[in-house]
Amino acid sequence: MLEVGNAYEIEFSFTQEQVNDFCKISGDFNPLHWDEAYAATTPFKKPIIHGALIASVFSRVMGMEFPGEGSVYLKQVSEFKRPLFVGTTYKAKFEIVSTNPAKHTAEISTQVFELERGKIMVDGMASAMHAELF
Image 1 (cartoon, rainbow, N blue to C red):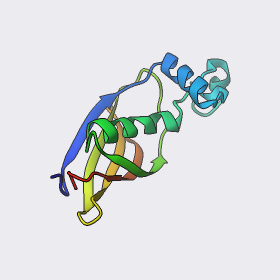
Image 2: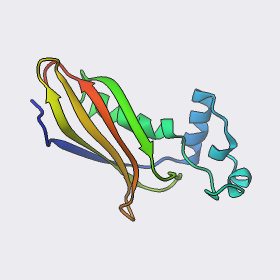
Image 3: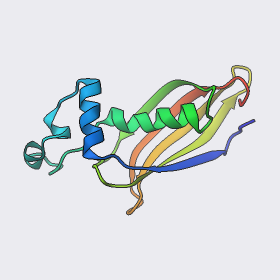
Image 4: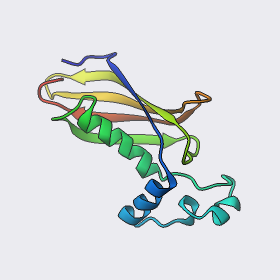
């Protein structure tokens, strides 16, 4: 059984090729994500990673690693505090903040930090259900 305070961390990064693939999969071809010349004219100065692609890390962890297989990922609320860039390593942190054993659910803090500087990039909360772990 998982309980309040249990935590999990994972490091990740994305390549421009992965971002370009996500453009194709999602249909979001905003040049801010793939066009270096366009992105140079924005406050970000270079292409940024789609928020939904970052959230896919949360989906992977919830479904495969923490709580893991058998989980149902019910909800995600995220605040994107800073842009994320290709080729930069990030750390995603997850911590169970509450559980409801009657419903087999948990609220899980979901955060992303830039590994090198330790700055928070994404702050959020997820809900998951797992019949055996909560």
